[in-house]
Image 1: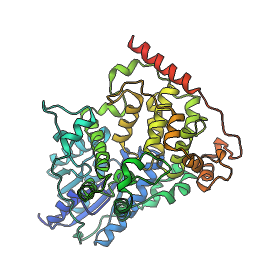
Image 2: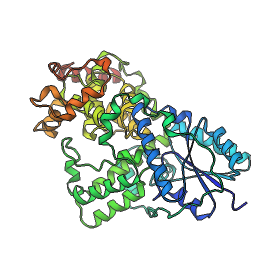
Image 3: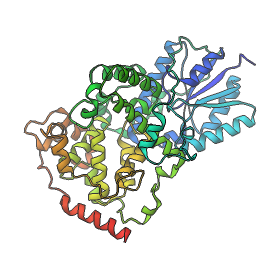
Image 4: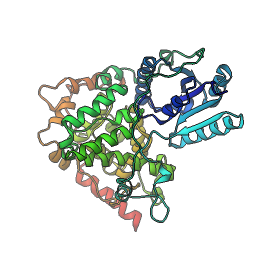
Length: 470
């Protein structure tokens, strides 16, 4: 049965190079049947990430055609879909790249157990991360709870080479029937926003590799400083592509290492950010409750508010705090948000507005095209104080002082807030074209007054923190 096909179950690994599972499959010489399954776990994605995933699937389907293959699309629960494909194709193996969020782990564990019980070669591979979360241990054999020791533990570790894309995939004698991607309507929930966000995307492996190359050629030297300036194009932007596996982490690691050895000043900081992503997955593996519950259980009694009218103003970019509002509008216009801004809006919601971090986490999960389950959860809990942060709760970002430091000329604010600019640009105005009509927003209306006085909001948060610890 060595000529029996292998089913390659694709998920967040939409690339041909630096793809360990794909390369191992190609090495067998067997016919390969790449499959993407729209299962309930994938259906549960928020509006923006689901739409962006569909674009990635479309791009990867075209890439497979260039190497003599094709992508079969099926919809339904993963196990019965894969079992049906096995029956139809005579495949004797199903291989996939591991994912680490709780829902994917539960699904994949069930699939692997059931298929192996049928005598099917069910295998999972690494490829989404540099290091398996269970392979990085403290001296006592536990897991890391603080980033800096984690970085020190992995920075000198050997990372396997990123192998090039295969030239050809062996096709089966006959291809199984599949769905039509358009029929899935993955962008339906985006409504008007899709047309606004689309020009800001870099979809597919070729775009991701070009993005990396461009960053290392022109911006890496200034990265350590420029990455904190939201009005400056100072980051790589690769979070979008990493989220869907359009570029592999080993590709980025080795390219960053080369740049560092060649003297690029910001390369080590860039590599630390890549490892920050690894740390998020490390924590999600060892403490999966981070995605839905306080990482520090002592925070369960903290008096955060649930969803509320202030949070709705926050969602709509109408808090009266320009740094916060510019960031929220940036997300609606581009599908992404600058990392410095993410910290500011998260701190503002959870501390100045005393609103539970899950409210923000869920909104980001609906709006971000670079949404990542581990990074989103760790980022929100880090900002809220309930997560893996060595600093105490009273580190409360002040949007007013932050904007003076990181947007001193108001370029970022004017780029995205029409009401604060005499001649608003296309991105500021496109926000009003992207949001739901039911919001009834108008760029000609006066900019709103602040929801809360920043000093009073800070004092209220500190009082709540003090009462919790008294």
